[in-house]
Length: 441
Ligand code: UGA
Image (cartoon, rainbow, N blue to C red; front, side, top):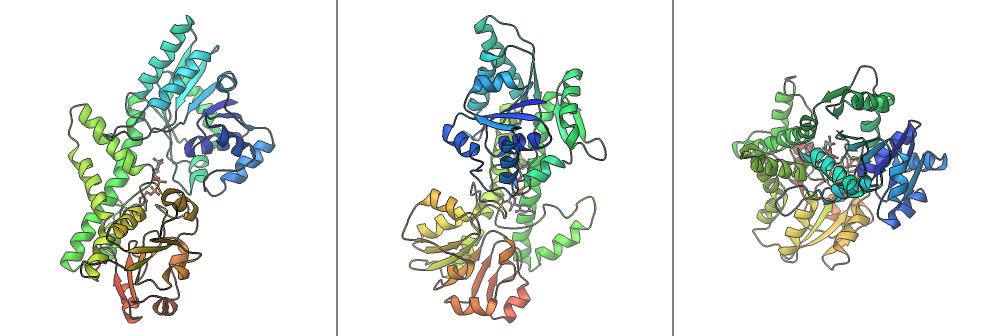
């Protein structure tokens, strides 16, 4: 089938590459000429396991191409995916400027029947706005072309995007038109394994499903972080509590890991956007607002522990920091807890010696060269001459360090662990002061 994807960011590129890999011919349109050029050289401008090989292979075989030419995109695909960014506005609402610009472009150029699919995470009601923008553009030209608008949210996790796309738990299709549902069903047939994973529903329910899924997951995390703080106060161990409740299949083990807060481009933005949508519709979403508040507080827990440890004075101290990305297997630093920690440390006059397996380049891009930030070559180098160690991201390589060496490298054998990587008893035996989440120090 012929497919066009507008936007070659994270969602757009994964969508384009996976559809091409399934044998379709895909044109990916982006307004950023430099990005198009980079991609056309087979280089992926961010880190996602397996994606660069997939892009290169399909590009070389002619099933995937990149262009800035919107007209080429509109004339190519029966399916026109909109996968451009929806940055959060000041008030937490998702900014639809780019989505509606694409709709306007399609409406200005289209000559034959098209299925326009919103793939970006967009608030309830966006498909209607996309339809209006398409119709308005057609009207300006005095043309009438049949177009269907479908909501088809993505559920990719960074670091596992390809397998999430090609082996999805569910494929949600929001449309009121049975014929369009059949077209979408045929498009997704290569990924609809074992049993039917396609769920067809009305457009608004589909749009809300995406937010509901992320908000539910974020709620689980904030719930556990809230309980972790209680556990610490009452002398319980949240890791034991986690196993104790996760064994109930109604609760389950997934997404109940306490930590130093959730980050990334999705949870923080989507929870805020849903609070905004609810309030616009006249409902104050108290629970969701609390999920966000708890998360913001949780992102400061490591800093508060470090501050207390040093009696409130961090001037001249150096903190080694392991992990900068918002989670392992990505170089994404958006809303990362590491940023809250680093910025608070700097504000208090402390310096940071940081290491992350892949997010060093990204960190340099965000913060540039500064005297109070040393980007180190490896995890041990970050500890050299630092007073204490803080861990923010649970990369595999941080799970079994050489504690004897760490003790020699750090001025104080003290670890602030935002991801509960180690056994507190073991660390105590090794002679460390060990602060983790939801377990007594
Ligand atoms: C999330 C969802 O998991 C995807 O299903 C969704 O498609 C995606 O957002 C999206 O809307 O595009 P992602 O942001 O890549 O995916 O990352 P997650 O793996 O969900 O992790 C999010 C954050 O939660 C990370 O900071 C992670 O450290 C934190 N987390 C996760 C916890 O603190 N505890 C947990 O138990 C799980």
